[in-house]
Image (cartoon, rainbow, N blue to C red; front, side, top):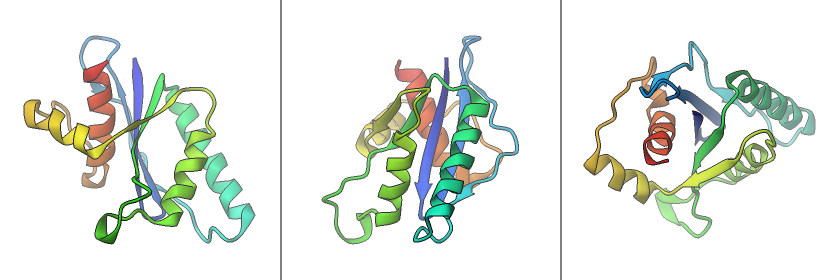
Length: 139
């Protein structure tokens, strides 16, 4: 099974692709860099972002896409930005694999009992890695 973890951080989407078809979790993300949504007030930028994101996702051929649940009622420093909700909505439009949500509390509980048995090429991918790894180890 192949899973993509997607971390939305500001205007950036960070992706990690994992595969456990061989019984061992393998990171096959490669030298991927984050995708950024520039100037979301211009529809052509949003369409370009969506097309780039979908092409990237398609290149990994995932069986599932996992993103972090954003609480629309959160406030203060935990409040998600409106841009992150726009990006989340665009991700949910992807039709070739289910888009699933995982809550931060679920991840924290999982990693209290389990170790992250794989690493990333870049530190900024760690949250996306945790999402995909949790999904593969829990399903």
